[in-house]
Image (tube, rainbow, N blue to C red; front, side):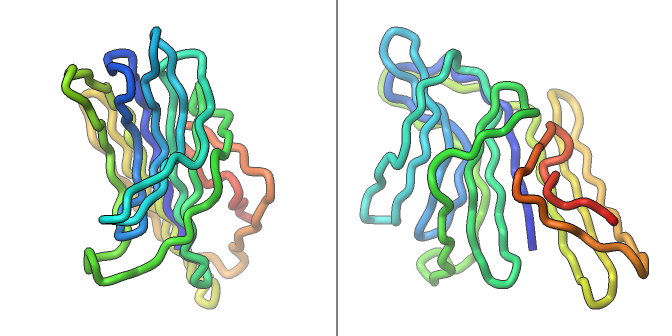
Length: 193
């Protein structure tokens, strides 16, 4: 019931007011991305909205360059249905930004939440470069002591997917309140014991 999506973004080709990043998409949605500003400045923003009702910028944090990593963590455990937004300069030290999105399953799009990579341009025609998309999923069945962990990664030339089913009678997960993530492990708050 957990999944995480990470992307590396270079927004240096974007024009002022263009916005690019990751989105948790459904009728009620939330996005984390980089917005290009005047004079070569950039900000990481969390934007939330509802289809047909507009959107609002929840938070905007100036950053030193247009290059960073973005991440959305989905938590479906015990029907929590929340998405949390993160950003990082190096893909190692993550900072949560904005508040969690309380996901709502509605029939306006019929399917559940989807992840999206986007770049909203304007008439001046800027662009963003994306690479190193990483998708991780952890499905736990504690009663049967089984855990399925899947990892999808891509770089400039390759696409990788790996899914592991771990079965162990004494295998458990522990939740840690202060996650420390890396480029390849965005579920640091689970520790095998």
